[in-house]
Length: 219
Image (cartoon, rainbow, N blue to C red):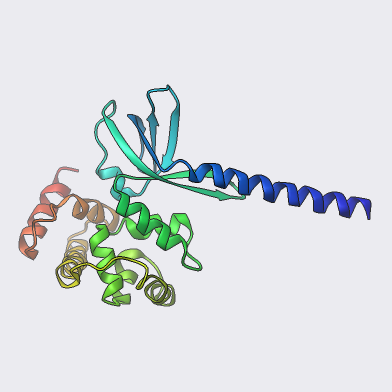
């Protein structure tokens, strides 16, 4: 009974410790400093105090990072799991808000949220949710139909509205372009990276296709 009691106390202590770490982490809302390291999944920002913060980022964020040595600001979310404590970084505050909404959905963890957010601009993903487009979330976000339906059900009223038709149209074009480029032999993840680099102002399908081809030809 003494060993059981000790085990309960130890578990209680760990829970209290994790809660304290989460509380302290939530105080880190943003980090400003110099970009020291960048990889497809992580970035390290060195603050003026000489402290380097490692942040997990989406592939979309990675494509928008400045050059090493330049200054930038990340909005942060602290996630505590059994594996450890991670900081997730976003270049825009609205991306942080969307991330927090995704992780509030049952069955969507931080890594899953980043994967969905890498599929398009915040406005496009938000519009797809508002329009109830489970098909687009399945195709671009890589989630199953049931999970996509749950996302729409739980997030529709939480996120701010946006002009849906235009942004959903861009997502539909990107899906069509991706399918066309795959038939030409390009790999899906290369196509997705290229489409992220196509300017949002390019709203015609033919022009988006040409821009994506230019980017892919440079690889």
